[in-house]
Length: 228
Image (cartoon, rainbow, N blue to C red):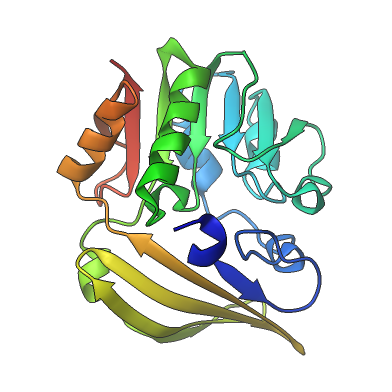
């Protein structure tokens, strides 16, 4: 399977190859993630942010004193970023020939159901992290896959978020559609993701010459990995 079959989206404005709506992403604000990351890494650490989107996390990391290189395959996403070096590239084809103190892979990108693509992501992380640095991955806690059901949630900003069409086509795999409504505008994002148990993730990391070194929080959703 390719990423274009695993993900697709609809709605006004530009939709990226992985189904994300640029206009919707540009509205989003951080919810404590930058401070969470900042507390887990050295002061002033250089950061390579893979899949940066419109800079929801980038701008706060810059404000916290980090040098950030933001990578995304969508030029429309990158056009919203200010103050950071930007690189328009897919994660799997990235070749900067530079090392960073921290490589950041958020937004559950690592949970792609394409095993080959996941390994390519992890190899890109290893190729760009310093030998004494770390890779920070964001996944859903494994238990989330057992319990998640369709829901609707209204935010204080007037945005309505719905998860619809939830199915489990095979063990450890989730197929679902997210729906985002802001006023008269509505976007959808359909995705297929794979549950990453600790043992499965450790094996995948090992193939990329990385190893798990702990978690940033109690629910094990934020994983810290280091070169082996």
